[in-house]
Image (tube, rainbow, N blue to C red):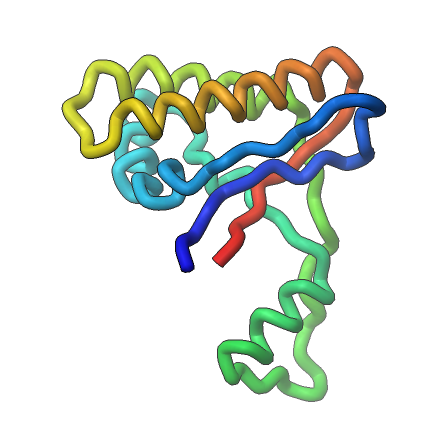
Length: 133
């Protein structure tokens, strides 16, 4: 099974399919984080969020035992599509200038992210990044 990054929208956009592949982005995530720092933009993972129940499930799957009085996980966070667009567009330009493995697939995933974030921006819908393992 292969990891993938994908977009979760705050609410559905009628008639719009927001599927993105995201596998190439997941595989290149360390390089993309390095590029983001180099060019002074937010790394994609800064937009990651999840519902507390999902985080509890992940912890259980990893065998992590939560303390009885532990602080609960933070609520799911939503981000403005314009912020995500700034990162995606900057990463696309930076990745195009680098000689990276699977460049075409990384650029295709960034194009898909841009398509979805443009639509979310037009409709005023928030978003966050998620990871499928």
